[in-house]
Image (cartoon, rainbow, N blue to C red; front, side):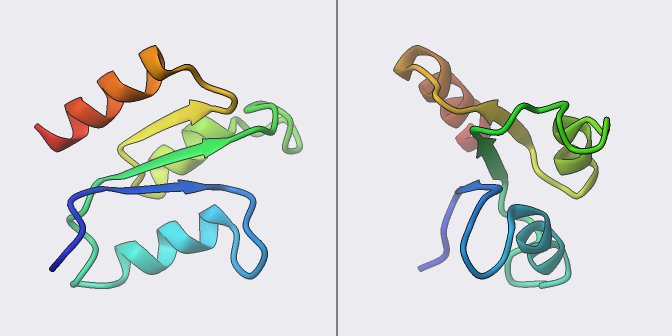
Amino acid sequence: MEPQLIITDLNMPRMDGFELLKELNGSPEYADIPVLVGTSADPASQSGYDVRTRVLRLGAKDFVSIPYGRNELLPRVSKLLA
């Protein structure tokens, strides 16, 4: 069974979210699965580069800042699964 949606954080122990996006996009098996990326880091804090823009350019379908409320996450997930 193939996932319908991947939800991930940018900050992970072995591979960061940017690397994960590159891996997913390079994989025919996962390239078409929508990805929602979240992070607790300030979206504009990485050397002045907008994190949101970067993850979207790497193929994520949406971005959310953590913490997020249920009223913010559920509509995003519903939209990506539609």
